[in-house]
Image (cartoon, rainbow, N blue to C red; front, side):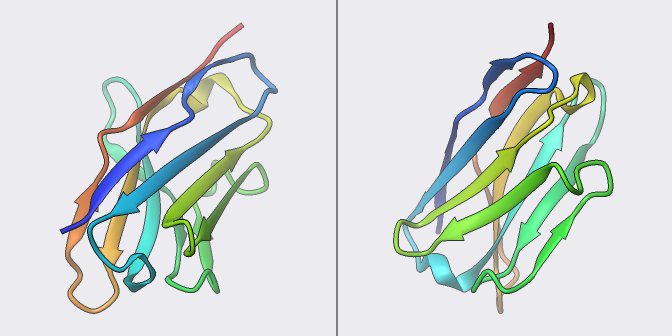
Length: 118
């Protein structure tokens, strides 16, 4: 069982930056591929970024490539999402997700809201 707690959301102007954090507890953090998803009002939850267990590989949605960076600190059981050049269409609730590298079990955080508006 993994517990995930996100933080760092808020209101930011277009062009601004935010860094989201997700702290994991309850299991071996390095056994999990970490993901960030987001869900805008009226839309489905979609994958934003993925980072493998050792941080050796990343995947980004086309809409955020070049603007968002996912990283992890296995010593701190934390995954980050650095978001730069934010746009109003980035407004959503952002969710941290952990997927076990062998068992494929998934866990979700409670979400943190990001609003990009002037």
